[in-house]
Length: 276
Image 1 (cartoon, one colour):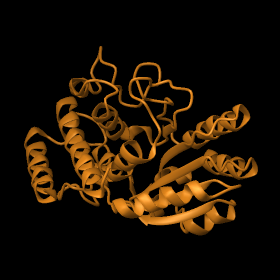
Image 2 (tube, helix red, strand yellow):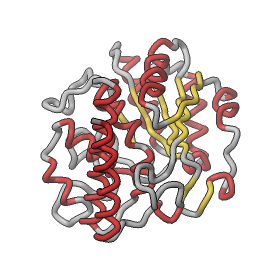
Image 3 (cartoon, one colour):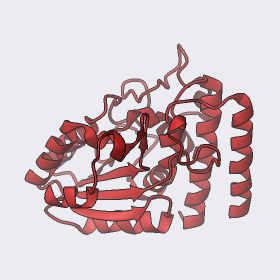
C-alpha cells in the first residue's frame, strides 16, 4: 500500500474504534487511537499473513501486549477480512466473540490472548524461539504500552530476547506518555527508554508513531538487523485524531457518549476527506 492508502486505513480504524466503544458503552479509546497508525502499517504493509488461513504456520505473528487496546486490533482484523465488520458491533457484549481483551480461542487472527500487562513480550519470545528451532523465517511483532514498562516481566523478557539473539522479534512501544493514573513518568518513571533498551542489548529505533513513512523505514530497518531483537520506540499522542481526547489521561478507559462519538466521527471524517 502507498503511504496515503495506509493513512486512510488508519483513519477507518479510528472511526471503527469510536463506533465500537459508543455501542459497547465501555472500553479504552485513548491507547487504541494512539496505536492506529502502527497497527495499520503492520497489518496492511509489513506482516505476511493470510486472512483465509489465520493459523498458517509460516505467517508473521502479532502480540498485542497492551491488550486493553483490543479495539484497534479488532478493527484491523475486520478490515483485513478475518471476519465480518458486523462483528465489531458486538464488542464487549455477551454472546459475541470480541471480548474486552483479545482471545486467541474465540477470534480469528488473534495470535495470543492478552490483558495482564507485561506478559506479551514473553509470549512473543516463545513464538520467535519456536520459529528459530523449526527453521521458519516468520517474524514476531509485539506492541507494548509505555505504562507497561513498569512491569518487571517486560525486562526479564527483554534480557531473554537478547540472550537468545531473537532477531526475528520486533517490539514497538506506543509511547504516548499517559496511562490510567496520569503521566507515565509520574506514576513510575521509565525514562530514558532509548538508553534502557540499548543497555539490554537491543537494536533501538525512535520514530514519530504517526508518521507512516517513518514507521515503514523502521520496520524495514528491523528486518536487516542480525543477532539481536529490535525495539521501535514510537512517540504517539493518546487519543490521536479526536481533538477532545488528545493527550488526555481521562480518555484511557472511558467510552464516549453518543454525542461525543458523533463529534469524534465528524472530525475523523473530515480528516479522511482531506486525505483525498
